[in-house]
Image 1 (cartoon, rainbow, N blue to C red):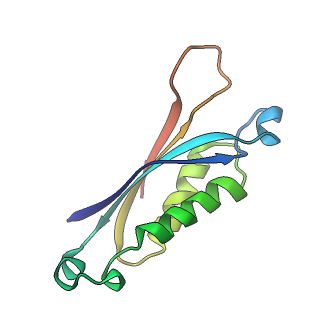
Image 2 (spheres, rainbow, N blue to C red; image 1 turned 30 degrees about the vertical axis):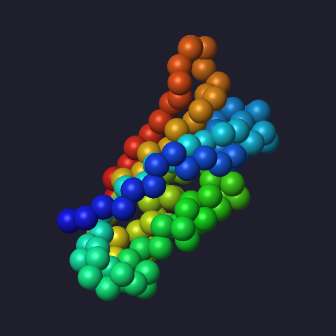
Image 3 (cartoon, rainbow, N blue to C red; image 1 turned 120 degrees about the horizontal axis):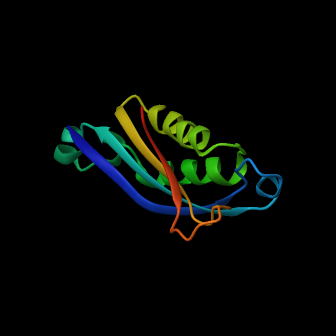
Length: 116
């Protein structure tokens, strides 16, 4: 099976458990891996025969920027639901990274990865 990859999509969103996270936008980064059959698109060279990754990027950006969740697990699941809305998508692997987590440790990010 084939794959469409979107890597490093960044957007500000209001997601988190702590009170300050529920009012202040912070940066998130999302990777999307879609399992799809691109045989038709590979033969036809027609956008209608595949998943439009530009439209999908906009949909993911809207979820991160306009919806609000406490847990990264729910945010990742919601993005997977949006990706799976296209019947051509067999499965989706979503990784959501919180780039500035409020933890007392020096780290690059915290992340959740789901596969649906």
